[in-house]
Picture 1: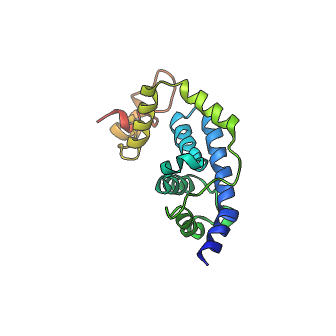
Picture 2: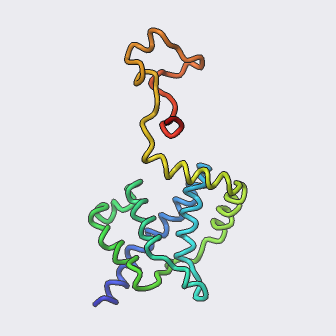
Picture 3: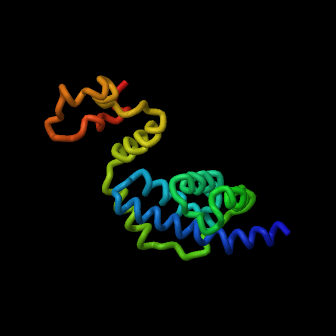
Length: 174
C-alpha cells in the first residue's frame, strides 16, 4: 500500500512541484533576486541528483523549501489548497527514499541560474541572504508619520516628493 501511495505522490504531486520550482527559479533570475535564485537552484538540483550523488539528498531541505513556497504563493490551489496538500508533501519528502524529478533537468535554466549567480560576488549573496533572514525579525519601517504623528506633513516635506509615511526599512535602524 505504501508503494502505491508513493507512486501516486510521484505521479500526481511531484510534477507540478518541480514545474513550480522551475518557474520560481526563472522568475528569481528575471527579478534579479539572487537569494531566491540560489535557494530554488539548490532545491532543484537536489531533485535531479544522479545515482553517484544521492548521498547529498536532503529531503528535509526540499520539504522546507516547498512548504515555504506554499506560504508565498497559491501554487497548490488546484489540489484543494495548502492544508489539503501539506500532509502529502510531508509524506513525499519524509526522507525514507530519494525522490527524483520526473522530468529531465533543464540544463539551459541551470546554466542561466549559475551565470546569474556567478555575476554576484559571494559577499553580495551572503548580504542578500542575511537581509532576508533578518527582515522577519526587524522592527517596523521608521517613518516621520510614525515618529512625529499625523501632523508631520505640516512641518516636514521630503525633498524628493516621496510621502512621509514611507521611510527607512526597520532593519537599518536600531
